Amino acid sequence: MIQTQNARDALAAKKTFRKETFEGSVTDLIATHQIRQPGAQAFLVEQSPLWSTPSHFHLEQQFQVIVAGNGAIGRHAVAPLTVHYAAPETGYGPIQAGPEGVSYLTLRAEGDTDAWYLHKPGSRERMQPGLKREQQHGSPQEGSRDTALTALTAVQVQDMIASRSDGLSAKLFRLPPGEALQVPTELAHGGRFYVLTGGSLDSDVGPNLALSVTHVPPDETLNAKAGAEGAEVLVLQFPLLSRLGA
Image (tube, rainbow, N blue to C red):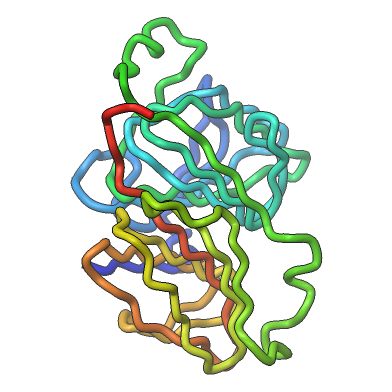
């Protein structure tokens, strides 16, 4: 089932946290980050200025998209529209917020609630042997967003994470007003998230405004076109997982 949620509509449900490993707030968009259940999961994290979340891993694969502020994930500097992918049980981080804080979407095809911190005893022992562990990063090319959406004369597509044979990819689409969103047919994959980062989008699930998140399972498709303001959309595609190792 296709699920969608506008982050601005959900901000009333924001929950603030202050603990050893995290300071900031979390807003649930699709499902909840606190209860593990089948199906997709999406939430918005707003991390406090200069806060460092320690290196950790999760049991499920995920994308993260920076939507405001800046900082770093490990040794990689991040800014708005930076994309980070982590395979299951892949240690990453720390997530370091800059002076204005850093806000990011966490997007999973299957929900998860735990974060296993690598500085804590016993965490590494939870990692299963034989898993393929990896991270991928992508950012917009310099100047690629300078043209206003309403001034575009053709669709612009940028590979943020190059398409792979296992289905992994991340693409940034910039659409003139009224233009259809046509995602190339790929090999089998593990589902997609569509993140509307600018303009508006009319789709099967109704009109969406930035910042909205839509999850589309691997056996379904999303029909969508840009609204009167044009549209900027990240399409994040999960790979088919293999637990046989690299």
